[in-house]
Image (cartoon, rainbow, N blue to C red):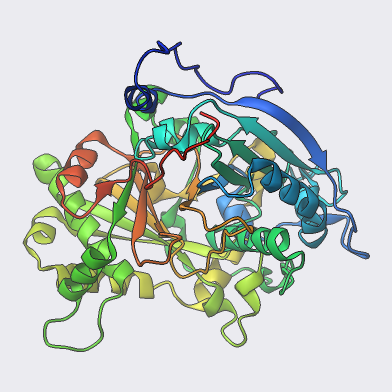
Amino acid sequence: MATPPGQQHSLPIPVQDPRRSTLNLLGEMAARCFHLDIAARTLVRASRPPPGFPAVLAVSNLDLVLGPFHIFLVSVYPAPAAGLDAVLGAVRCAFPAYLSRFFPFAGRVVRDPETKIPEVQCNNAGAELVVADTAVPLAAVDFSEVDQSLGLIQIPFDASLAMSLQLVRFACGGFALTIGTTHLLADGRAFTVLLSALAEMVRDGGLSREPLFDRSLFKPRSPPSYSASLDAEFARFTPETMINPLLTAAIRRRLYRIEAADLAALQDAASPPGGGRRASRFVALCAHVWKLLARAVGDADPSCRMAWIVDGRKQVEPSDGLLDRYIGNVVTYTSREASVAELLRAPLHDVAAAVRAAIAGVMIAARFQELADWMEERKAAFRDGGKWTEAVNLGFGSPALVISGLLPFPIDGNIGFGKPRLVVPWLRHGRLGSASVTIVPDPSGDGSWFVGATRVWPRLMEVVESDSLLKPAANLGLATPAGSRL
């Protein structure tokens, strides 16, 4: 349940001795959880609902593959010269017009009374705007500890809301702006569009390209047709397939950073030694992480798996970039299992070749048509509250790590008060037994990346943190400016 206005969002920091030095105080605050005080929680409606927009937005079968669960995109900003009142005023002013362009997000997520399939009532009931305050400065937040930073910045919201826009004000004058929605309506690419469009409308007052909500490209065929191998890729997500909550509590979350120069070196090592097509930086990092996973597994299992979440927009509609502004889900999973011994022995360029082959295997339009057809024959699961998930997510069998990234997509988080220091997704564990990593670019544009370990086992964390390339991203380079609210 969402936190009522005026109540604490998490555990409060114990009272500190005011005689302690500022540096000591910051260090102690960084080691503790902070809490949010909700200053305002209001519903905001679209100022100009688009004429003729459907009363109900039926989701696509590709949306149903992922299903409804909350996801958050958190952007963290240093203190702007104009002050926090200016930030809040600009966001409040732009939000109604923004909802007019992204109208389904002003509606409500409901279930069809007969089929129990989720859908969106486009009734302009309003999206949520939350304003919260915390007594700590950004410099005191250890962002490498995700549960004690991003996990406290995001604010839970009601399941029926299609969007919750959240502004958290820090004592230093910095702030976090978070877009919360449901994965039913947006994948990673759509999430970046939501943020970039909001930034453009807050900053410039208009929108250069309209979003696309038409799901007609993802209709199932009649009769549905798909490969029998798809059945093996999915499993029902039930209490019997979830890890127990105490095991979930042992899973860690961490945020790392890898410098541009280290990525370049990995790319060189992951490229074929005799020339030819160079490995991408993403493929090179995936190969490196796969070798780290093999090292963590050691003698515990003869093999381990890597899986990737792949965006298929260019495969479904390659001609004119029509789907670049599509707000929905066009993603699929692919996974590969390999021998631990072979992964440890193989040079990085051989592991990179395996990564590239795995991803290329699903980068075809037919893959997404088959997914739409496959889900068409499994919609009955929603009648009894069921949900499907990719079997590799569950973590049964050999250890598995799932990698996704927002790297190919332009992310513009500048709402008119400077670039953010961090833009990263956040979501709950979901009682899944696999590890999970999300890679995002540094908003500064310097070529460095942040690596968010959404789910990581303690042993894997030990191996990653013994690696010289992935460094804990503690403070984002944020300092407490003179004259702050601290």
